Structure formats: structure tokens, C-alpha cells
Image 1 (cartoon, chains in turn purple, yellow):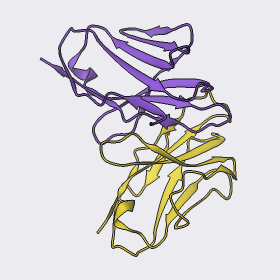
Image 2: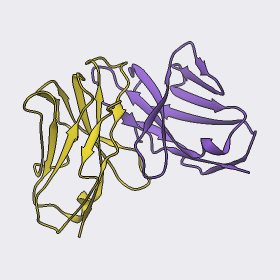
Image 3: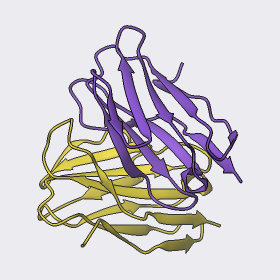
Length: 110
Length: 115
């Protein structure tokens, strides 16, 4: 079993839709979590950190469920420009290295 | 503003050749990371430096891979006797402190193709 698992998609959604991605992790002692966005042939860019209390940034909401060991990303009112791959990142306890999921591809359709 | 800079952007080498990939982190960033990203996959950790000290090299796939950061700023990832399976995008990232909750900032990557 991979340390961090994501549904690779693709998720094809119409503009204006709400879409949610989940990411599960196996190491219960993991300490930090992030969502990154990666456009085709570009570098990953930080979208948001994920906190235990949940956090929101505009149309994006991230949540952490430690008991079930998953994090989620919700995108409301999808825009064409949201089309990208969304990478879930987990940092295991005692390390600084990122463990990435395979990424979930999102395509927002006009 | 200056982000993480990597060079070359693209590198084509014949199997068996040695290659060197360079990373210029954001000025003042203490932590530097190298990742390898295969097509359709998420990046995979290779190695981590805090200043000039290589604290974790557990992700280096073989002893053909070597990384250094002698003055605690620029880093070089060297691959000796390249093989076709080394073809991938090599990403460098830096963060401001050696803390797990500091986000990492990535460079554009070096796209390596081994013929």
C-alpha cells in the first residue's frame, strides 16, 4: 500500500460546479499536510496548508481528518483556470521530506 | 522576485554519460530538497540538506546518484553512468527553516532524457 493515495481521475466537471478530492495516508504520526497544484509541464505550487481545524481560502477549503487519516480539498464555483493536477502532500513525523500522492487531474469544461 | 532556479531546463544524454543538475535556492533558505518526478506520478523524495549538511539521502535510488551543497547555498545533483530509467523531471525545492510546517518552494525542474 502506498503511503499517500489519491484517485488519479480525471475529474471532468462543468464550470461553476463544486468538486472534492480526498487523499488518504498510512502513517498515523504524520504531522503536516499541504495541497499543491501542478500545471502541465510546470513545477508544483503551494495551494494551501491543511490544518486540523480546517481552513478556507476563497473558493478552496481544506480539511484534515486524523482519525480516518485523510485530507480533503473542496473547490467551489470551478473556473476553467482551475484545470490542473492537485497533489496531496504529507510530512511524516521526524522528517522534513514531502511524501506526495500521485495527483488528481481536474479538467473544468466550458 | 527570485524563486528557485534550476539549470539546465532540459538535458539529453546518452546512456552511460554523467550529468550534473544545478539548483539555486531562494536566497537565505536553509533547507534544500531534491525530488524525482516520473511521467504521470507525484514527485518522489531523493535527498535533503540543511545548510551544507546532507541530513537525509534515503531516497537516492543507487550509488550512481550523488548530491552536494558545499557552501550551503547552490546544490548539484550528479548522476553517473546514466541509464534509461533515470529519465524524469528532477525538481529542487527550498524552504526557509528546518521545520516541518514550512512550505517548500519548487523550481521549474530539469527534464532529463537518457537515450
